[in-house]
Length: 329
Image (cartoon, rainbow, N blue to C red; front, side, top):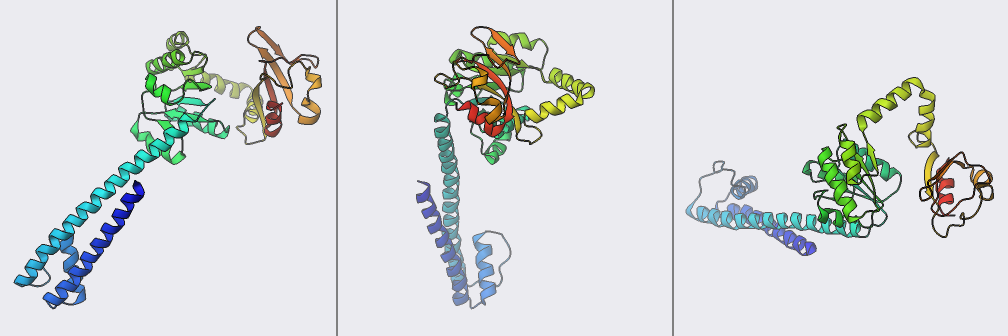
């Protein structure tokens, strides 16, 4: 459809160019003007600029000018209408293409809100090479989302239809960082009603909002001011410790990082001890802790004879490539 519109646009522009040439040579023949005066008169006539005539027109020249105005005006209107149609159709086509990509997402993350915090969250997800989609209804942010080439939906994050369009039932997690705590509560409530198993992280600005978000189903609640205050105090008291944490979470652009690795069903790690896994010698990975949520077991600094089971979550520190290999065991 767009290709057809472009073809019509090219033809219309060619017609307009022909009208300009015809007008120029028409004034040269009818009025006997030179080329510069003729093309100048043609341009100001077509654009309806309103400047005075270059020279007085004869009756034939006036009639020719009327024909030139009508034909050029109709052509310009036609070009404008085609241009608008192309813009609308290209935007629709782009949105359809985006929604098709969103439909194909699985085990992805949904970011509700693209303010300052949402922007940072998306940047971290992008750097971690994971799939995500943004829900943002503030048109001021659409250009930024387009420039960053992020997948996004322009609906309401608390609306079931919007969440379903963004693949809530196939999503791995959702983060709610909307403009108010009330919106985050509604988004969390809607997300959990559609997918009770989804992991939800929500932001709470007001102190009394944390309990409401937890009741709505949020698995974790982050209070930015409290978190920021604690971190600043930690930097003040223990700067070396925080520098190390920044390294392992990837903020220092080094290859070392910390990762949560879930032992999936059918993994070759199941039933083996840590000593039997290629952790230290081959991969140079340190297992900080092992957690089994179903059994309520949390082992810090596990021993080499600790047995790994399906569903265990291991907190590991190592190089990115080594951690990726461990995930695939």
